[in-house]
Image 1 (cartoon, rainbow, N blue to C red):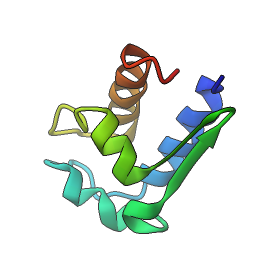
Image 2 (cartoon, rainbow, N blue to C red):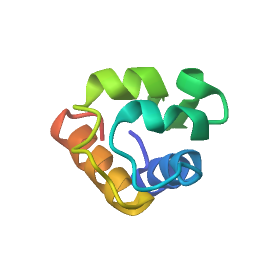
Image 3 (cartoon, rainbow, N blue to C red):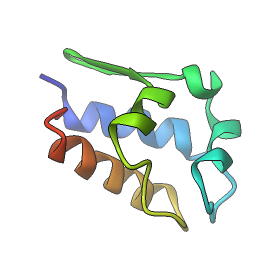
Amino acid sequence: MADEAELRGQLTEAFEGADYPVSGPMELVPALPDGPSTEFESGDVSMTAMELNTKTSGGDFPYDDVESLVDDLIDELKAQGEL
């Protein structure tokens, strides 16, 4: 089982460098250390940023800050049974 706090930290670290506000997922890609191949791992959960985008709606854009983006992504992963 994935540790929510660990995954939240990884997502925040990966997306915090984006130039907020962001109006779509493509604006987040330059902030990712390995682009769409950036991996997020916790427990038995492992996914790339590209997989994250397919497992969720990708978010409810626009976002003014990293916290609201990560909150939505975590909520969607929970709804999908990933967390």
